[in-house]
Length: 518
Image (cartoon, helix red, strand yellow):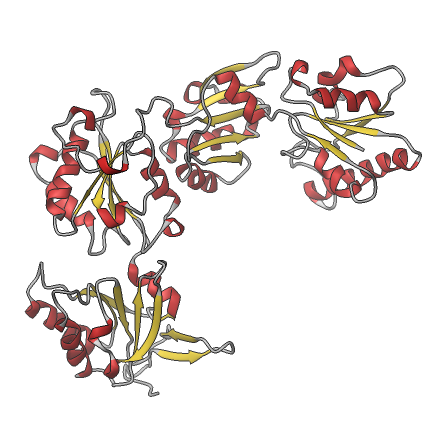
């Protein structure tokens, strides 16, 4: 059995090996709808002989409407089983069978259903073909992917929400199987902020080929054999910037603005989560990929892959206001700017710093968006179990931006209310006494054996998550890469069957409002 890839439609794009397989075959099989016309057969027609036995594998349904007791999937399963049996009869009789497939046989093709049912029983060769993805890019004359860009191939039949998330989080994409799915795909592209970049290709390399901007395409005219293409973002990008030149551009440097002067700039504040790429949301990935300029604390910028055409502006972690003004000025002059923050940008991070500056009249017309990220407390809690499973508070122990007296009052209030508490910025090289003082204040209201999750570098190479008793919390073991999760009176520590400890706080609170004991 041969699975013969015919390419995207133009017979001249068939491979020499595909032609030879057809010539060697006794039986030519191809799929078609109930009207009997087969695109695969039409592509290969000039290579078919009168003595070829033809097996037309006619789909019983082409949409999801059927009265089959097993529904649409049941009808197709029965069809594939019967079709495989017809081909097996030829193979058992010693005949060579060539199953024709548009594009590539194992790329969203009908052939694969025959392959799964027959390849383990008969000698089989799959002959690859040019896919519609490659054909579409070629007909557009536009690079599909460059350098380290990621290409995502999506079926248009996915739910709109799923399409939106995946389109927002990738560099380049091809969406297949349009037709009746086109309105959903168009909305997904628009919601992902990618509609202006999207191109449309219909019947690539075939008669009736059409290309153009997807936004200008009439939904009522779109056939199944069409694709949406998000091409490479780097087509018109300047040469890749040297790694040691990331921080030299200033807002008054014309080279820092890569977009046309007439284009509107914007500023997006993004959270990278507690560590690397595994913690990024699809929306954040998309915003980072779309940015002309990246601005942030150097440690957080280093988590973002270097992309040709982007400029990176790293700075120290104590110049939040200056960083925010720098980023807003870039956006005011027309650049797409991403301010990179660790964790969630709205939790003790850069979102507020940006908004504090953005209220100035000079930046009143600059669009500012904040995209959420996984904050340190939630990352640490997930590693430990569910210590924040009930009401909890979040406090920063840093007294750089607020007096220690305020921190003390809030610690007393949280502890007296029997809330679990996440303590951010607990200590650093220049200040180590706050952890010890916080422990003393909490012990005025909490039992000495209250569980405390000490989580350091969650998601990073030096990750450490352990649980200690509140009375035994050692300030010397805490630094700025650590977050502390202090339990309430209800928080439990359970040892699992594999020996690991799980920390969790019950969802229900005692009716009398008091501790339930051990």
